[in-house]
Image (cartoon, rainbow, N blue to C red):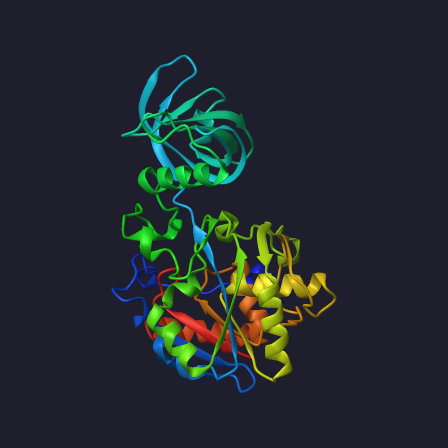
Length: 378
């Protein structure tokens, strides 16, 4: 019996825990790639490096140039009365909310364990005079903290101008912050993650998770595509922690999609127009790139004509009509996830996608962020 496409249970599958890739392969482009051809519903198994053969001269490859912030801070708790406790506490900085001066920065964050982090509590960070002071406590672990860098953390003070202040904060994060790697890695972040959990073209800081389909690309692969005549364009979508938020409702249409900030530049708009006019295809690297392009298309009546930026809470599941993207590179996603729903919509058949996932399990593909990938052509 065919399951209702709007039931969250229709997007479930069984994955052996041993197929979850907790670490990247030694080489970025050594991953395998499953090729799904939607018109013929055929499945082929190949190496990621063969993506060069999958694109034609004049095709447009669109990537998300967002960069993950090493904004997870782990320390000890100093309560409002000044007592220092030994247990570990942490805060993941999400969005800046303001700045009092060069050394004090306010951030919306996720705190853990939130019940112990009352207003007035300081998270004392190791090997630095910096602290995170809790100034607001919200629901579900959310709150607002003030990051006090301290003079030893910012030896170049006083700083002049927003650019210098941003660079000083970036240096602090790079030195004392941890990458917010996915919980299913079941390990702590390492120094290696600061490089490997970023794409080689990452540029605009602001994400709490990587656009993982892009992790497979090397500069060498990109050079080969350029030499072939493939065009390139960029968007920015700041991937939020909501990307890991499970669907907690039975009917997927009742799920509340989180918003993510995005920017679609005019250069990319022009590149898409030119690609479509010459009869070539738009290849989106990842669900985040797809979400950005389709958000803009919806906002502009079905055809992208101009640059835009804003917040997207576009929720794509079967029945959605794609207006821009012709092919998508994506990793393998969690059961019952909105991302699995999106690629089911893109491929045109939930049943076929789940059959492909079953075959991937049988073929011992590596799953999730550091895993193998799938190329879907419509």
